[in-house]
Length: 84
Image 1 (tube, rainbow, N blue to C red):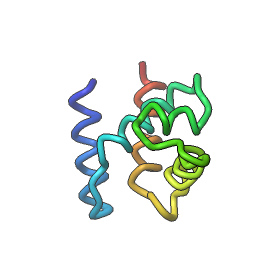
Image 2 (image 1 turned 135 degrees about the vertical axis):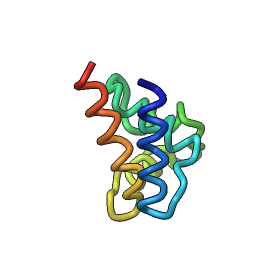
Image 3 (image 1 turned 60 degrees about the vertical axis):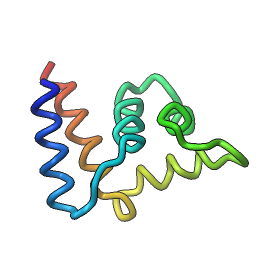
Image 4 (image 1 turned 180 degrees about the vertical axis):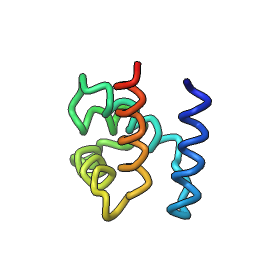
């Protein structure tokens, strides 16, 4: 399963011309788990939380117009979860 997701992540990166950073991948995985707030997902992924920045960063990461590759990766993670 993990290999399929890695392949899909590479395809997403190629189609958008942007790499998924480790933080973005970690955020997406935490977000799809659905057990934490968006800000907590960002904090766990390593984004700073000074002055509420984790909440702002989470909002940006979930915005498909700003980070389309992250949104698409989240969609893939959800579909993979549904398959299991």
